[in-house]
Structures are given as C-alpha cells and as structure tokens.
Image 1: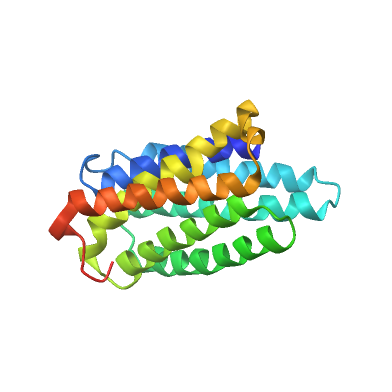
Image 2: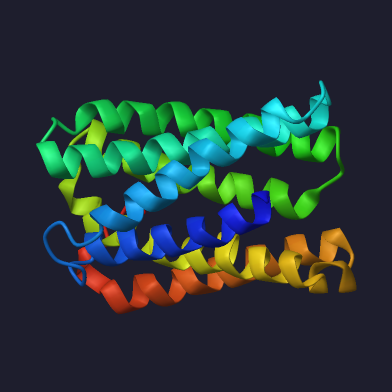
Amino acid sequence: MGNVGLLYVGAVLFINGCALLGWVRGNGAVPLNIFVGLLQVITPTYLIFTANGDADVIFGASGLYLFGFTYLYVAMNTIWGFEGTGLGFFSLFVAIAAVGYAVVNVVEYQDYAFAVIWLLWAYLWWLFFQLLGRDRDGLTAWTGAVAAIEGWFTAAIPAFLLLTGWWDALPNAAWAAIVAVLNVGGLILARARLGSRVPAMV
C-alpha cells in the first residue's frame, strides 16, 4: 500500500514542480495536492491501526504524514490564501526529519537506496523552507525543477519498480547509486537549462 502512495507522491511533486516553473497556472495543482494529501494521511493511519504493534511498520508509516500534511497545506494555502511562512517552517521540520529517516534506513535496515531518497527529499524540503520561510523568491524556478525531477527519480519510478517486483533485480546498494546518479544528472541538466534563473549559491 505504501508503494502505491509513493507513486502518487511522484505525480504531485512533478505537478507542483511544474507549477513553480509556471507551466501549471493558477490553482491548477490544488486538486492533486488534495487527492495525494488525503491518500498520504489515510494510508499511514490504516497501516498504523493494522500494524498490531509492529514497530517497523509503524515507523515506515510515520514518515508518510510528513508528505500528506505538506500537500494538504499547499492546497489550503492556495485556496484560502494563508501566509506561506507557516508552510515554509513546516518544510524545515520535514527536511530535518528526513535526515533522521535516512540515518535510520542505513543503520537499522541497511536500505541505502531509500537513505539516498530521504536525503534528496531533505534537500527539496529545505528548498521549500528557503523559498517560503525565508522569502527567497529567486529560488522559485530551481525549487520547481528539483521537485519535478525528484518526482520521477525518487518516487514515481522507484514505486513502479517496487510494485512490479523489478526493484529486487538489483542489489539495494546498486539502486542507491542509480537513484543518486539520475537525480544529480537531472539537476545538472536543469541548472544548465535554467541558467540565470538559478542563484549562484545553488
């Protein structure tokens, strides 16, 4: 069930990235943020209630709320015009938590691929914090590009491979390297394409 949610996290990250890049206009991203936000709140709640005290299941489900709340927050801000700094500082919380989830994936589960994925998410949510919490509007295009790229390479494609069983065809460490290379390669291309729209410090 978690892998199904991950697939649609990829979709909403891609759409939100396109919105930040100006390709999705106005409130066009709101419906998908609501759909995926609700999915990422209902799914972990179900998993926790049916876990029978299994700590690994509960831990795995707990991280899903970070994303569900983010997407619902985005939708509410867009619909009702709430000031964006609250979402920005929540994004800082998510970024810090994501680093913790990455560490646990390495130490407890030896899941290097998802450790890399969590670290990439930490970077993306740190960008959301910079953009919304610190009003760094110059990061808008870059944050959109990172979101769109990570939507595919940290969520949609890994989820599809997990759902089909093809993920097991390679060792976990190999997937960690593949995920890292695909994301870094995508970001290098995006930086070149965006040019002056990317601040020098990024």
